[in-house]
Amino acid sequence: MKRILKDFYNRMEARYGPTGWWPGDTAFEIAVGAVLTQNTAWLNVEKAIKNLKREKLLSPKAILECPLDRLETALMPSGYFRVKAKRLRSFCDYLISHYGGSMRRMKARPLEALRPELLDVHGIGPETADDILLYACEKPVFVVDAYTRRILSRHGVVKQHIPYEELRQFFEHNVEPDLTLYKEYHALIVYVGKDFCRRAPRCADCPLAPTLKKNQPILD
DNA sequence: GACCAGGCACATC
DNA sequence: GATGTGCATGGT
Image (tube, rainbow, N blue to C red; front, side, top):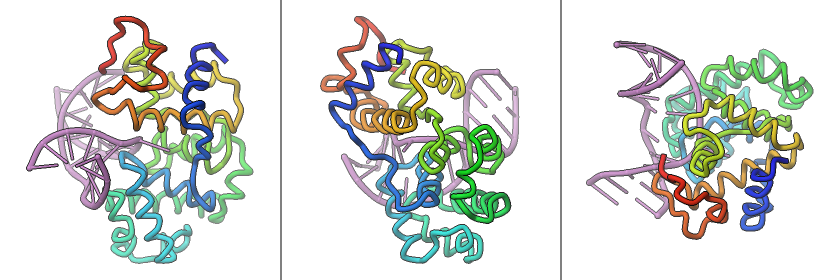
C-alpha cells in the first residue's frame, strides 16, 4: 500500500478499529441502508429500518406491493421520504427482475457486470452502488464519499474537486484489493469524518492531523 | 432557531 | 462540463 494511505489507515484503526461495518442482519437490509443513508445521518436511517422491520416491509416483494404512503410513512425518520420510497422501489424492481429478488443470486454475479447494472437503477449513483457492491455483495470496490474527498484533499494528497471515479481508482491502485481492508478503510474514514471533518474542521485531536503538511490549507 | 447529514436526478447555462 | 436546486427529518 502506498505509504501515506497505509499511515492514514493505521492511525484511524488505532483510534476506532475494528468498526465491523456495515451493520445489518441481511444483505438486503444493507442495500436498503445504503439508499436511506443518502445525505442523511445514520441515526435516522436506523429508525427507518426499524420501522420497516416492524411493518414487515424489509423484503423486495413487500416494498413493491405495499401502498406507497405506507412505505413513505415508515421511511419518514430518514428524511427525503418521498424520494427514498421511489428509489427503494426502483432497487427492488431491479432485484426482482434481474435476480428474482435474491441478493444471494445477485452476489453470484461478477463485479464488472453488477456495477453498470446498479448505476442504471434510478436513485442509485456511484456511492450508493459501491456501498451495495462492497458491503452487501462483498465485492472489492473502494467506496468514496464526501469525507474521503475532504480528508484527502485537505491533506494535499489529491486535488480538491477530484471526480468520484478518479478518487476511487486512486485508492484501488494504491491499496491492495482486499475485501476486509476495503470495508474497514471506508468505515474508518466515516468515523474520523464524523468526529473531525465536518464543514468546520476540528483538527486538534484528529488522528490524521500529524500527517498534515505545514501551512496546508484545511478548508474546502 | 440555524446548521448540517456517508447523494442523486434534473434543469440550465 | 460545470453549477444550482429540490428533496425532509432529526440531532447538536
